Image 1 (cartoon, helix red, strand yellow):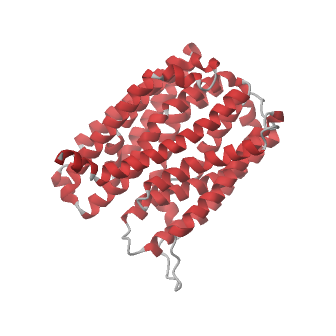
Image 2 (tube, rainbow, N blue to C red):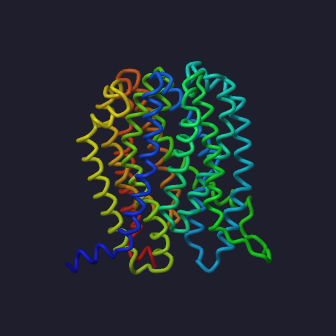
Image 3 (cartoon, rainbow, N blue to C red):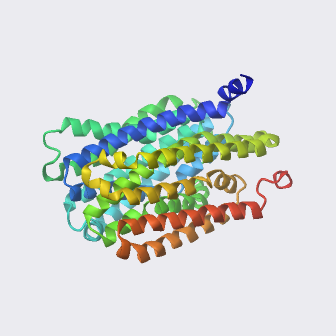
Length: 430
């Protein structure tokens, strides 16, 4: 009985539980939106919508240049007695991201004709694609607000802002235009404006967590300083995203929009495990940072406890999803069951990826990011080469095998370097 009480009272487990519930809520809402898209649109049209979502997510991430990672790291290490300093970091991050977002929107507009030809196979209206560029700014707003909450250790709120609010916004606009969203690709514009709406709503959520001093102090976090400090963290975000989505991008490059839809649905389902991983990330990372800076004698036990929690949770999720893989695909439409083998391969790939989560955190905390960046770049190269070799011959299953190969390489290499440099050894922590 005492063991059960100890588990129930464990703050890490409790916080992780609520974070997973919040993440699951966001997953459910996103799946509801995706299921509507796949069941109401032709498979090629669904591929267009999914590819647009991918481009908005990817380009906005690049435009953030690692600022989101810096916000978590900075805010989590600031004492609760300095809320004004946390707010200063966020507001100056807004300024920097406004500039970078506008630059990337301009690039988006100019590059739209090439993007339409190379990745959408001319099956999207050019003006609609250009208009979607405004989503970059508001997507950055959603993500920045979410990561700020993550730094405050409000993991459940962070997860809901990042996933539930955008999905609810999209579902709301679909419901509002239910009788006409299938016509003339109106759903493309609905997605664009749903991101705008989500950005506004996320800002309303964040307002109660801001503390602006009535007597302004000289800021130590100017936009230029944030830019300089965030750049070393940018490759982590870039590489992580591209390893998740390079396969979909290259499926779009080599194959038609129909295959994009099939692969995207399989990838979305496999990412359920990553949603659980993201919930654990939001819970573990800020606490690992805090333990490293303020309670080092407990760091080793907390690290291995967190690692065990990640592996056990993701193994259970992966095995459960393997059992229900057929029905999960069937929920989208009968045509999508053809992607079952792709889904199985991707599920194993995401599990291997998850096993290195806490090890990656220690590279950041110990300021050994350069090693992590090198590994991520190497893994990205492995991924690109594998995709080029396998997609033309094996189609979407080839893309899934490429992801599996890459994630195994990534996890093994990260753990090997972690052990080689003894990042958790007591002598190294002193």
